[in-house]
Length: 172
Image (cartoon, rainbow, N blue to C red):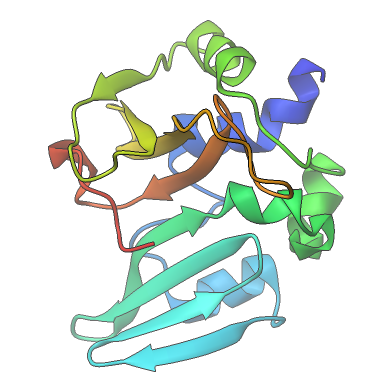
């Protein structure tokens, strides 16, 4: 895997944005950036928009705005076609798996080294945060391999959410 294979994931962690959208973006801004191919899940005071690789949750706070984003890296192991076309057009094909060691090295070279966060609620994961962007990175810490899923030492997800300073993650 080359450094360019990590570009999308490194940009997310280092900027807190995906193609210019992030927390606070409107539904229209997200659709303008990522397109209209998504599924909506409506809840009480939130709408979760599933773009395959991404889950973007909008909160109703005097109008709908993005509250948090989860990059569901583990989904790529089963279906690399889940990458939104706008992301693939910018970054090219994404890898099916993201190994934490080389990814963290790429982040550190950019000046965004991850810091370990203690979190007893995620026993099968090690949790890291990029303090500057509040990006939470969950890494599989279970040595038992499950065919078709990320294994030990591979990234499960990236989360951009306001709860990350406490080490807590948005709901999976």
